[in-house]
Image (cartoon, rainbow, N blue to C red; front, side, top):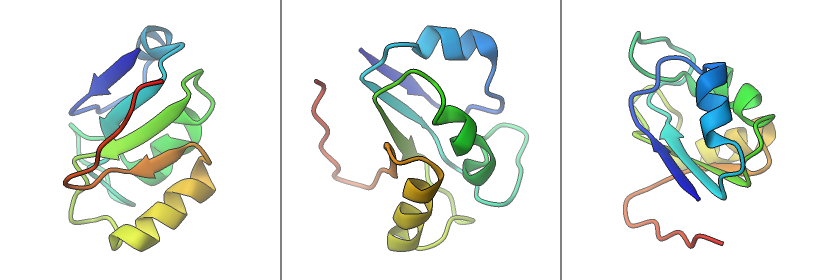
Length: 95
């Protein structure tokens, strides 16, 4: 199952239940170390997302507040080993 979640401001228990069991969660990753009312802040939200019952997490909508892709990829993996930032042209397979 694929769950795509754009413009996520809050990680709710309802959203967690909806995502449970997904092989891939593609989620808003627009902000880094900054908060905007309508977007997820990666460094705050990713540790919580990592505890959700999903196989893989790909961050999308990467904003200007995020570090360069290589640094962001390392930082995301430290926060959650099964998460990574997406990029233009990324091809993903569902399992």
